[in-house]
Length: 132
View 1 (cartoon, rainbow, N blue to C red):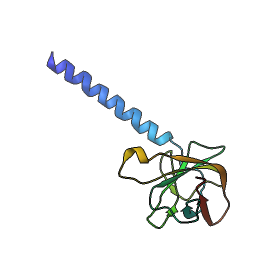
View 2 (cartoon, helix red, strand yellow):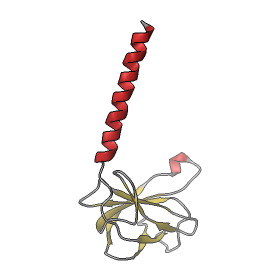
View 3 (cartoon, rainbow, N blue to C red):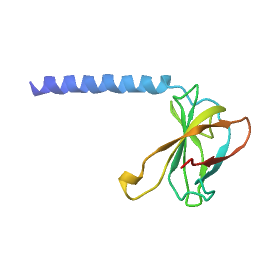
View 4 (tube, rainbow, N blue to C red):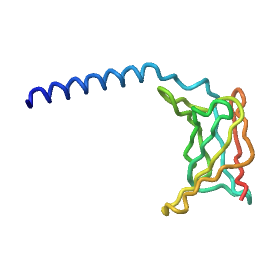
């Protein structure tokens, strides 16, 4: 009986591996991207210290562009989603969310900005200014 169980388990794993292989092959690569980097500033004009930013495209939100914010407030975006990721962000309008860095989980509350930010063809230098 143990031999039959092992055979069924082996077949199930083989089918799962085949399914996962097909899923990877059919996943689309990210759309074309544009170089996008910048700085996150507080309302008073001083740079934030750490955290992350997320740029979500208005019409193609499946692919999200993200960047870690350094101690100097600077970030570089990479587009995630699909089969791989790519440097930069999709051209077009984006909703931006900033998540502050903190050792305390309760202080890491994401803030979505009301202003939309636009990525244009070519190199983009973006200044994200927090509203509060």
